[in-house]
Structure formats: C-alpha cells, structure tokens
Length: 235
Ligand code: UDP
Image (cartoon, rainbow, N blue to C red):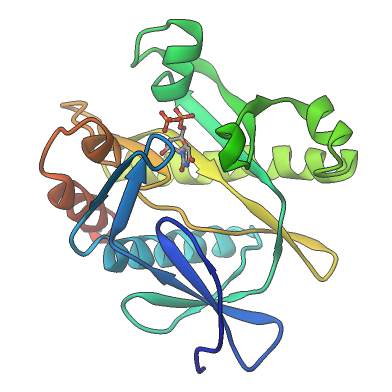
C-alpha cells in the first residue's frame, strides 16, 4: 500500500491517504507534547513502540469482538487503517484517580475507584478539550443518543479487556483515552492505544510507566515506553 497525500498532521501522528479511498495510513512520530503543546520534546523511538503497542492492543480487542479501525501493520512506524470520520469526543476511562481528575476534584492520586469513571472531553484545542457531559455532546450535535450509548458501553467493555490484560502483565491500567469514528454506518475504535494515551503504573512499586514521565520530567521516558512493550510481549 503506497502513501498518498498527507491528510493531517497531529502532535504524535501523521495520517496519509492511500490509493484506496476507504483506507488511510497512520504514521507514528517520536514527537511528544503536553500541556496544550506548551511543552514539546522527542521521545526516542516512541513512534516505533507506540505503533507496535497499538497493533497488539487493537488485535487483542478485535479478537474479543471490539471493532477497530486497525487493518494491518505496514512497517515499524506505519499502520493501515480504515478511514473514519472521527467523533470529536475524547472518552476517558479512569480506574484510579490521577491527572485531570485529581486536579479537578482536589483528590489524591492513587485512590482506587469502586467503579470506573467515564468522562467526555470535547476535542477542541482552542478550548483546551473541556470536560462535557452527554447533554453538551447532544446539544453540540457531536453524536446522537444511540451513538453515545454505544460509545459508553464499548468503552467499559474495552476497559474490562485491557484492565485484565495489563493486570496479568503486572501493570495497573490507571486511566486512558479513546477516540471513536464512523465508518460505513458503524462506530469503530480509532486513534491509538499507547503509553501516550494511557497511564500505566507498576503493580508492585507504583512506578509510572507512561507519558507522565515526560509531562512531569521524571526521567527515563524511553525506558518506560520500552518496558511497557516488553511486559506486553512477555508471556
Ligand atoms: N489523555 C490523552 N490525550 C489528551 C488528554 C489525556 O491521551 O489530550 C490521556 C492521558 O494520557 C491519561 C488519560 O487520558 O491516560 C486521562 O488524562 P487526564 O484527563 O487526567 O489529563 P492529563 O492529566 O493528561 O492532562
């Protein structure tokens, strides 16, 4: 599959057209940004690691009946995916209090939630991805009632699958962000699933093994991404 025109360049990925109008190529970059792109940097090899981690997790989810935009891995930085119309909602699922939820509600990071918490953030950089609810999403015509119900149910299913998978790898899945897109009348899981979009803590030591090492200048960022991949691959 040959790369066509660059369709979109984001903070961590480039998306290219292909000679098939229903398929796109997603290329993972080493660039990292945080805090509305006020903090910028490079995480060496991040693109390669995130491409591989996303492939493994999309394949895992597909094997459990979750439809995703993933088609196949092309090489170490590129994956082929179905073209979707992205629903401009960032769906966050939290199992443990951290990051934005700790700040919003003045809670300590690390509190284990009795039930997962689902949040929607309106995907709009100029507004700093504000926290919204179903009513805002409907008022803004971002998605219909049926789509929101499906997205919610899917997100909790994905959480169950990923939480149990990472549990076996000695990692707590603290929280993560998902994006969904429309494709031929269906809603598919899109974007990526990686240490850029999830928080992973070592189960025993609670060491952070995700993008928080970059956001908070904790050091050993590359090693943390590599460690997550190593754990995922390990039997
Ligand atoms: N997240 C993401 N992209 C964003 C914002 C958050 O992938 O634009 C992920 C983040 O890595 C974490 C989860 O979503 O795993 C929840 O993030 P939170 O709302 O706590 O915001 P943050 O602390 O990252 O600002």
